[in-house]
Amino acid sequence: MATASHSIPADRMTVLFAVMLVAAAGNTAMQSILPAIGAKLHIPDVWVSLAFSWSALLWVLTAPHWARQSDKRGRKALMALGVVGFLCSMALCGVVLWLGLAGWLAAGTTFILFALFRSLYGGFGSAAPPAVQAYVAARTDPEQRTQALSLVSSSFGLGTVIGPAIAPFFILPIVGLAGPLLVFALIGLIVLVMLRWRLPDDVPRFAARGAIAPYPLSAGPAEPTSEDENDPDAPEQEALSWTDARVRPWLLAGLFGGQAQAMMLGVIGFLILDRLELRLRPDEGAAMTGIVLMAGAFATLLSQWGLIPILKMSPRTAVLVGAALGGIGTVTTGLSQDLHGIIIGFALASLGFGLFRPGFTAGSSLSVPRRDQGAVAGMTASINGSAYIVSPAIGVLLYNWHPMVAYGLMAGFCGWLVAWGWSALRQDQPHAT
Image 1 (cartoon, one colour):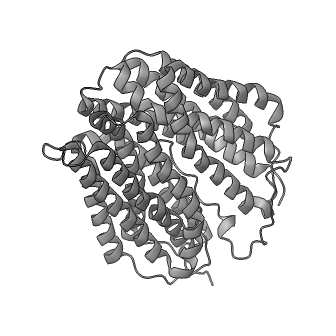
Image 2: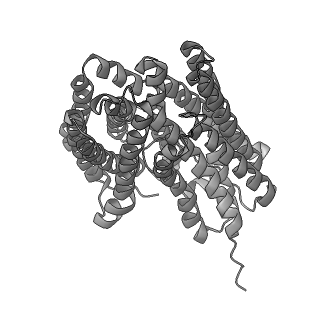
């Protein structure tokens, strides 16, 4: 007798998709307007960058804890915690920035409070994505699981496009540049109501553990959870050393390529303000930054959802070609003097990094057998997240010294990765289980 197939109803999948989408869209919307806010408040660029670095650090530190807690406290509860952290952070940051822009708070006080309230997003927002993935994995049969996990993971990538695209429309007359934050807080509240109303409490059909999601920036979609990671009969994961000769070259590739990508994202908003002479017109600068970030996000999605599957690139090819395109794109961006050139350069660099990142992840995975997949997944997540802790601020410091020093360093990382990776990254030989 055939067993019934189990899948998640469409209305519940919509809620899960929205939980993932709003976290990425809200963060990239803030990323697109924060350089303009800093310019309006006359806050040094590096402090603006450090506000994002602080949030990214907390995300990296707390994400493993929340991934474990979702198994103990329930997936719905952890999703709600993540959404509450997001909407409270957005609302409080929006109010503080509104008061600062209106002159009711000193600029320094404004940014100290802003960084404090950003902690809510970095510390609690990371609870939602692994809970969503574990919820899906625990309620779908293997034949539906991969498609369902890919769908919810794709919402991160879609969010990186939507956030910068709609943020300029929320720069409202009374609240000004704080408008996008307040609107996304309202959207987060709506998602929380949907979550409480439409999603039933946890009665999982399978044991499952959600993957730790990367810090959401204009970097494209998160990789979906592997089906093997949610197999209750999978062998226990063994410790894998960071110096293991099989994974070390891939981890080094991820480290250097990740630094270049993080610097590029950290600097771009300030480059737009300077090259387009918009420091005194920050509202317009926020709109231009949103256009550039949206172009980069589209290019990233094109590479990951189009070029890699169509061309059937191996991980080694994706890393090397991606690093080469990333280097060319960063130099083009750094030399551009108008919006057209910046868009082309940034999109080309984003296309390259969109190839590099899944190539590095897949190469690391293929270098070890199945029993080590959990360990190598944790390593790649750490590499991806750590790049956004200090590199954006370092990039901004170098940019303020001289723009081409910053962009030259980004291109140097990419060029070194191509030259070194040509021999260090072996042709892919998938491991047997």
